[in-house]
Image 1 (cartoon, rainbow, N blue to C red):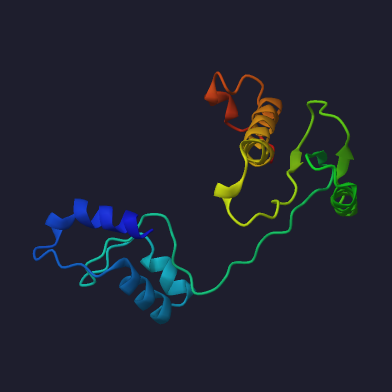
Image 2 (cartoon, helix red, strand yellow):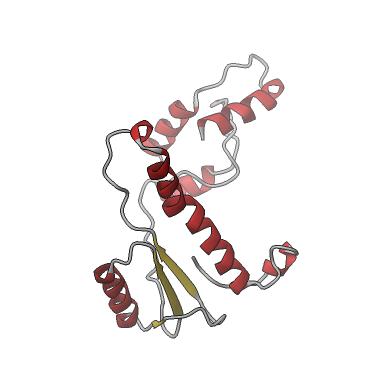
Length: 176
């Protein structure tokens, strides 16, 4: 956020004659302590005369935490992949999904609304630099390479041919 604000300030520095800007932190502190939600909505994306900072266009100012909508799993088909084979975790996730009206499927039939990939827990080690090459490769495969391949496969299920033509993603639905 700070680097974005600094870039905006640099690019718009000729708009303020003496080029004296407040820091992003100073402005954020001022706005958050003085603004309630209704004022914050007015301030977002605007230039406030005299404060010498151009706010980002995307809203970031709020004085309260917004309520999060409840996930609606009614009638959704869910496919769970587990790398670590932790049956207790899979059972727990499955029962939670079924309680909320979802249906867990054991195979990717192409008609999936939600993919869940359980990578497992990060192993205990003191430093990454102390891992052997085999341990490092296993770590990368478990947490980076395999999840990337599964994500690509899930995206191809949601939007067949989307990797060749990104326009096909318009209006597509699905979660990973």
